[in-house]
Amino acid sequence: MKYENFGSTLKELRKKRGLTQEQLAEYLGISSQAVSKWENNISYPDVSLLPVLANYFQVSTDELLGVDTAKRTETIQKLCLAADGMIAEGRYAEAVQSSGWTLCNIPSTISCCTVLPGR
Image (cartoon, rainbow, N blue to C red; front, side, top):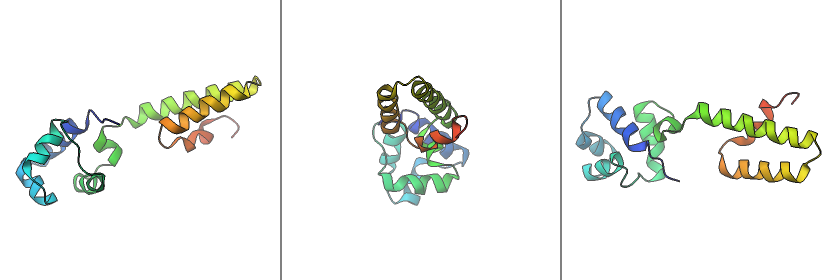
């Protein structure tokens, strides 16, 4: 998955802290060229660095990756309500197929059960 907002988010967080790419690179023990590539979305950090970066900048990994959690939650709610409507209409196979897609393509959809009425 490509996180197109990662680079601009990282650059913004770095500048808010008044850091240069070199300073951030030194903190992480990497080259400043790597930070430059991240900020320009040429490459991405190793997944093990994401929690380190998020902790350093005091943001969630979702925020660091530019994930719009409000939009994701709204999408999950709509998909769950649609599946609930399919079940109510007896369209079980369609509901299972839709739910399967949701579970495979949207992280944290286990929360689906909490947004459905009467659940």
